[in-house]
Each structure stands twice: as structure tokens, then as C-alpha cells.
Image (cartoon, rainbow, N blue to C red; front, side, top):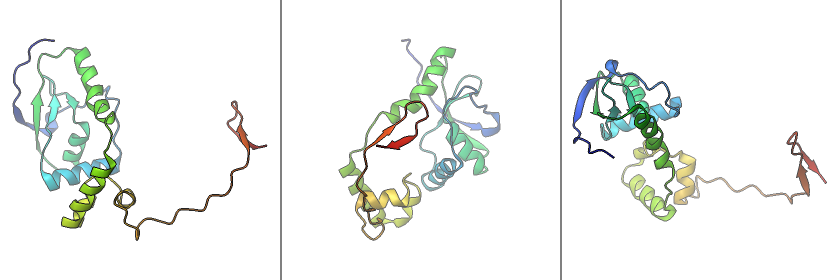
Length: 167
């Protein structure tokens, strides 16, 4: 590992950025809306990472949200001195490593409850659906009654057609 220079946040024209053609991560319209809402509510908290040629290495969703918001300039951190292989690996690692973490359900429930008690409008920017929030904080008025489960019959699944057969 080589010693990297300290980074600086730069204001960059959004129109000067290009997306990384091999980015394996996709973003739905609803997710881009959530990112845009977060940027409006909290401002820019995580700059877009770009290479020496203004190619996005990490932050494609933030760039799409900025475009949706009509922003002309976005904060970027320029990553210099990375090989093409390092850029490819980092693009994946930036997304995957966060997925490997887990939630502490008790702390999350407590935090969501406190946040929404202080300001219910935050439920639109925390990334969970109203149903998920209701289930986590135990809001019985919003959690549907569990459906009564019918006794399950003995079944088997055909490995070729994946059809379930009752025995």
C-alpha cells in the first residue's frame, strides 16, 4: 500500500462528472428521491469520490440526486494515484462493506422512537418505510394484525420445475 496524499473537498461542476461505466450498483427512483430528500434536509455530508478524470468512483446515487435537485456544483474528493484495478475494487468495496454490517435492533428502535417523537417529519429521510418503522418501534396502531397461519400440509418441491406438490 502506497502512502496517499491528504484529500481535499472540491466544488465540482456536476456536468463535468462522468459515471463509472462498470459500476455494478444500481439505484431505484425511490432511492434517488430518498437521497435527494436527505441532501435537502441535512446538506452534503458525504462528498462524491472521483478519479483524476472526474469519473465517479463512489457516489453515483448522490450525483443522480444532485441532478434531480437541479444542483450545478457538488462536493467531490479527488482520488489520485489509484490504478484501474484499485478503482474497480474500491467501487465495489464502498458499497459492499456497508452491507456487511448489522443493526442493533434495540438501539435502532429506541433511536427511531426518539427521533420521531422529536420531529415526525424525519420518517421520510431515515430510509425505512412507515411499516418498517411501525414494526420496529412497536406502534400497535400501525402494525397490522398477524394473519392466522393455516397448518402446513406436507409438501415437496420439484428441483427441476420448482413446483410445490402436496403429499
